Length: 366
Image (cartoon, rainbow, N blue to C red):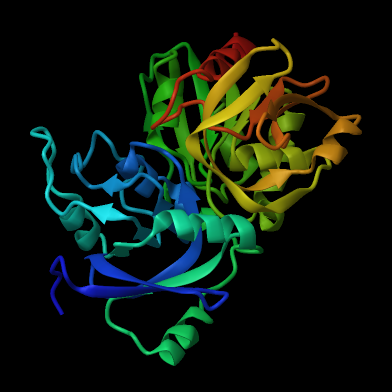
């Protein structure tokens, strides 16, 4: 079957709820964990963020696709990472003159199955109440029993290790090799804009695959270590915990973002847990407890660090807190040059209130 704007599609949730709409992207059947992003813009950056691997994204913005895509300038990785897309109104044509092409062609070429014409407000309210769950989108299967059988084969995000699948498979360099400082990046699913934010601050980067040994990374003699964002459950990433433990013991600066923050937390004995909904959007208020100032942040995570454990920890202290639900947004390790945040200071897309954190990392290496 070929795509037309009237091709039917169906969305079925793990709890049996069914929504009917119109197909977008590739005609087919695919699924994953469904979650929603409240960002008003930046859909291509969202779709190419490796942290979204294995997830079906609901865009809460009413119109998606109207400004098309730019293959390189607005991509956060070398491919589309999401497992599917859900929206209300989908524009298969675009109006931006500088765009490389339409979102429809972009998603179809990437093999992404999606659905539009959905009451996304009702769908999001359902998930906010029931919690994130697996789902299946199909524009070729409409029998309910067959849909449920296919949905049952999708693994739970809890207990799923994905970083080693989405990270680079070979180490590579970024930035000016004559730069003053060298930063080793542990790639757990890193975004390009994070790397550029570090590189443009006078750093030469070497990006290592997720399962690279500490010995191999340390042999490059970096001035600091960065632990990236990424997908999956941090509790099952023992290999990353072991490596970051050695980063910390090296007494060189360590900076972690999102999944990297959760890994650093586990290194100092803290526990992570799966959230009811997670945080995904561009307007989450966070308070910096060190400065007393608030920041509007970009976020994308479904796991978090347990607040009660951090507050009673003798190894780490709370530095940032989410003002919506009082969850952990940042920590620093006592007696070490190591800190991390749950939100995304590069904010691509999103506000740039938190980009000072990259400067703090640079300052620790001076």
